[in-house]
Image (cartoon, helix red, strand yellow):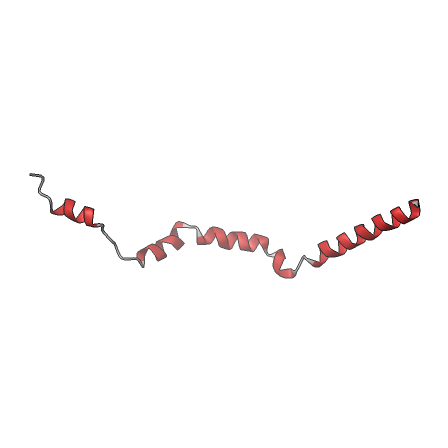
Amino acid sequence: MVYVLLAVVIVCVVVFAVLATSRRTPASNDSVADFQRHLNALSPEARRQTVENYPVVTSPIEETEEQDDGT
């Protein structure tokens, strides 16, 4: 009985080790490069290019406040 339990534990450990090593692909080893690319995308220089592409939109409330002379 002890040998069967030991065999099952060994088989489970081997299956776990095979699954753990098979999930590591060369593409998943680029975690540092992915992190640096993510940080670069969040940098002010990268955001500045996308913000400049949007037109300035004013709300109708802001337009009426600009036209109001305060009297």
